[in-house]
Image (tube, rainbow over all chains, first blue to last red; front, side, top):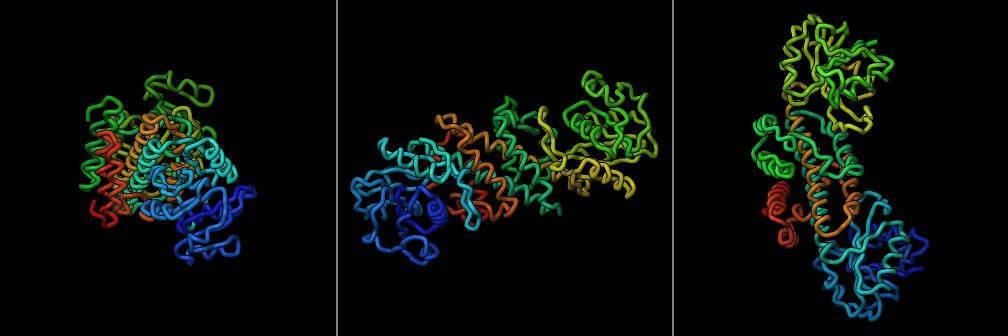
Length: 253
Length: 253
């Protein structure tokens, strides 16, 4: 059994706690959070505490708090020879300030509060200072059925930006589509099959091959028709993205 | 049986021909195309022709050709009291120049050449000049298992732009994510579960609720870190989209 102490009471910490409790290969020894109330729900399944001084012994201490709290919490830990990891995509391994071994256990997925997580669809980005610690994180990922990748701090920072594009910005494209529908009394669900197909297409094709539309074709007539009926902010976004796509396919727009 | 003559030999025409042939409620009487070679594959399943003068009798004539060819082909048709429709998202109903009844039968989906189409995932946007014709198009959509919506020419043009955002531009966000991965020796498949989750999330939440990330939070520290490591073109896109998202959530970025 891999013994884990989890520090944090937010969204990611909650999902991790649940899946650790379910796993037969993991013993979730304890959850720490400054505010007990946020972790009370786990009171019957593990020990909970709000005192750093009362942390129990474990193989790994997983800090799952907001980025700007990682340095603060980790600096209070006295865990020589133990492994302390954080779960942030944006912070480097050195953000951990404890006198312990350090690592990163970053789940590259969007977590929603009230939605069950299928951990087989959560790839973990692993980083450690030595092979022994790496193997331990590998074991934890495997124990909860998640794929894992060796990703260093520099790569992880790049991935974090990549995730902004494919998640935050793709969702914003849905938002703009939704606004267009609302403004014209069209039910948004009419666009849902297209959205689904767009995301599933790239499981078979590279995005470069999957691209379609007037920008790729260099179809200025359609582009101008579209620009005419868009509001100012959407016009600006449409123009920039159309030019960028055109450039990618050798069309000057 | 609804009798249909299909005009066109491209991607959409091919998929329509296939599904019409499969349907027990539709008789695909004939396919016309200027170049016979492109429709030869249907030779055993229906009549094919390259002569407008030899068009057979049918209930509906479906013109599925490139946008700039619709006026030209339809102007050659002499089909008084018959229904002639096009399948374009961008063209108005009046683009049909025949002396017939006019309509639009626009499948709002991305069609790939070598990929089977599940027509239950293809919503049709229907427009006609009268109820009788509308009911006929409804019947055709139902006969191939597709959902349908009454969408007028103005709404359809807006929807066509909406589709550019949720399809073309969302795919371009995947492309940018893919480029970031390639530049940093990261396998793109690590982002696939996130892409899948992002698109499936909005079946339960509105995009406005589903939005996450530094722009929504107004997290300028993370935004600046991201901008530092992006190349110029990605920087420009990141900045514009971040400002737009920020504005939507009352954050000045």
